[in-house]
Image (tube, rainbow over all chains, first blue to last red; front, top):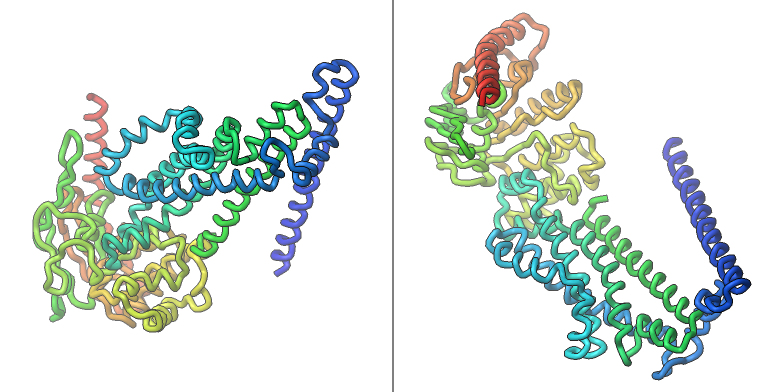
Length: 274
Length: 270
C-alpha cells in the first residue's frame, strides 16, 4: 500500500516536472523568436515584415476567428471546418479500403501477389503529384480529400499487413485446439492481434494527411481550408496572419493525433491490453 | 494397461521434415497406447521428437505415416476433444482470465450464463479466485499456466496434452505446479500425455514414463512408476527409479552428442 502511494506520488512529480520543462522549452522558443524579430527590425528592415513579433502573430490568430477576410469572407473556424471535412472524407475512405485490403493481403499469398505490384507502383508517387489532376477532375472539396486519402492509405495498409503476418503462431495453435476455425479464428484472434498495428497506421497516416491537406488546399481557389488561408494571406503580404494559419495547422495536427491516441487508449482498455 | 481402455493410440508414427537440401526423419515407428485416465510422460533427449508426437496427436502437425486415434476416432486436424497446454502459455493477451477460459465455450456457442458457470468452476479448480478479470500480463508465470490448464479443461476434452508446461517456470513454482496438476488430475480424471525433459518431473508425475530414443525418435523403453502419490522425492524408491530412467536417457543423450559433433565436423569440412 505504501509503495503504491509512493508510486502515485512519483508519477505526479514526474508530470509536474515534465509540465515545467515543457513550459520552459516554449518560453525559450518564444523569447528567441522575439529577439530575432527585434534584431531584424533594428538592422535589416527589408526582411523584418516576414518575421512578425510573437505578439503580432497572437493578435492575428485571435483576429482570424473574428474578422471575415479574403475573397469569400470566411473566418478561421470556417477554414478549420473545411479542412477537417476533407481530412475526414479522405480518412474514412482510406480506412474502409486499406483495412480489408490489408487483412486480405496479410492472410492470403494470392491476394498479396495480386495486390503488391499495384501497391508498389503507386506507393513511391508522392500524393502531392496528383494535386493538379485531382483538383481539376474532383473539384476543391473532393480533390484535396483524395490527396489525403492517398497519404493515409499506405501507412494503414502496410501496418495492417504487418500485423496480420506477425500474429503469434502459438496463439493460432491454441485457438485451433479450442475448436476455433477459419471465420472465428480470424475474428477472435487475427483481428484483435492486428488492432494495435492498425492504430499505429492510423496515427502515422493522419500526420501525413495533414501535410497533404495543406499543400492541396493551397492550390485551391474557393471552398476555404487552412492551407488555402495561408496562401491567400501570403498573397497580400499579411505575414502575421500567415504565421497564425501555420500555428493553426500545428494545433490541429496535435489535436488529431491526441484524439487518435485517446481512441487507441480506450480501445486497448476495452480489449484489455493495458 | 491395468485393464484400462485405450484412449490415445499411436501406431507406427512417421514424421519427415523436409529441409532445402535434406530430409530429417524426426519420428520412425513410434507406437504407444495411453490408457483412459492414465498419466504418461514422454521423456527424451532434445530433438528426439517428443514435442512432434504431441503436436501430431493434437492435430497441429501432419504426420508422414502411421495412425493416431483418440477415443477410437482417427485424428484429423486440431479439435476440441484434445486440450493442449503450451510451454509458452499461449494466452490471448487481450482477454481477461475468465474470457481466456471461456474461449472454447464461445466456439461451441454455449450461452453466456452457462459459460460463466463453467469458467467459474474451473477458476475455482485452479485456485484463481479473485483474478477473473485480470489480464495475462498482470499474472505471474505459474498463474498464467493455471489459466492455460483451466482453459484447456473448460472445453471438457477427452485427453489433455501438455508440452513442457512448466518448462518456463522457476524451480519452486514448478514443484508447486506439479502438485497442483496432480490434484487437478485426480479431480478430473483426464488422460494426460505430458512431454518433459526433466527426469525428476516425470518420476514425480507419471504412471508410466516413456523414454524415447535419439532421432529418429521411437519408444526405447517404458518404465512404470508404481509409487503411491504424493511421492517423496527423497525416498529410496523414488531415487532408484530416477536412476533407472537417467541411465536409459544417458545412452540416448550420448548418441545425440555424438551426432551433433559429427554434424558439426561435416559442416566444418564443407
